[in-house]
Image (cartoon, rainbow, N blue to C red; front, side):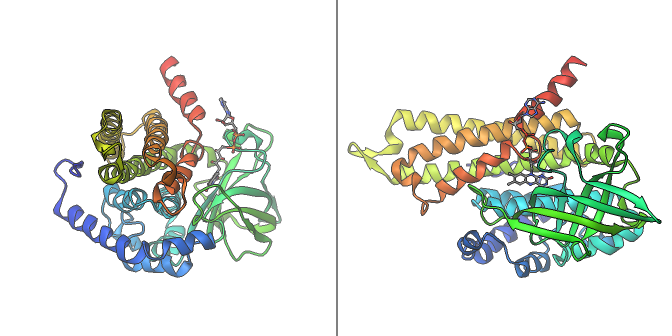
Length: 385
Ligand SMILES: Cc1cc2nc3c(=O)[nH]c(=O)nc-3n(C[C@H](O)[C@H](O)[C@H](O)COP(=O)(O)OP(=O)(O)OC[C@H]3O[C@@H](n4cnc5c(N)ncnc54)[C@H](O)[C@@H]3O)c2cc1C
């Protein structure tokens, strides 16, 4: 199958891809099972990723990054997804493609200097904290609040389902700072260090998939913050979220496409070997046609995400385009992986076969980062505007 998706791909990008593939094979594949069992990628491995230049590649050199473009970040996130290491891919996307860019785009100079270089090295891991027990798709339900008292902001509330929740040391927390207006006008983002008094991590939540990704509840009890901890301006939190969502959603779309490609590759390998009715499965027309459909799906979605990567780099990717990319790639991912698993028969249901992990890991992609239904809301609103 063709790997030449990026038109005019630079030599640097090709060399980087080869380096990433070697790193995954030698440093991740042998350890991944253990991380899945422990439900955590150890912090020491974040340092190893940092040492190897795999985190936040597109952060400017002034803040410790390489100043390359989004393609480089996606090389790593996608290679992890394609290899079936989706939990780590989601951890890295939250850290490098969401949190680091919130700080880069909305932070003041002191905040960028404080956090970004350490995020590049993996010494500081980021988490983005929006969701609460009563507020997921609908942020109006958010109850976490920050109230100003004697010149300090006092943060109270809780968050749930937070990726990197256990490992993180910088938490970007959305809180209501004005309840007299709608959340869209009364929400502020705060930078909360993991060692702040009054902050605590809840349990590492048990999930059906993405086991190696830590996902946590978080609690804030009279956490004291100052104006210097505000990210992007008072009551500007909603606008900041809206600005950053296209990048977040396209990153997820890239991961989904690569994940489907990885599952297809496993299926192709399997049907060429597995014998039934005197021949290999690959000789059956039903199997061949299914593979043709799957490849047509992964390839057309690949073209879409590659085009949108360029639009993102040119700062031309719209919220609707990013939503469409997330919607169609995550739905495609589930269908392709389900069909791939079917080709493995009973073996596909066995944990020792990697395709089973592809199956459980893919299901969340249609839910986090905005559900498929919310993507349809955004897209239809644009059509009808
Ligand atoms: C593994 C994992 C990792 C996550 N990581 C993070 C993270 O790092 N940070 C973070 O802040 N959050 C994170 N989340 C939370 C995730 O973003 C939310 O679960 C998601 O946005 C949906 O919110 P909800 O679970 O409250 O579902 P709800 O909002 O209650 O939705 C329930 C159902 O109703 C549907 N629905 C809701 N509103 C509408 C509507 N207007 N029209 C049609 N249908 C609708 C939804 O599509 C869904 O099917 C994570 C979740 C998981 C499971």
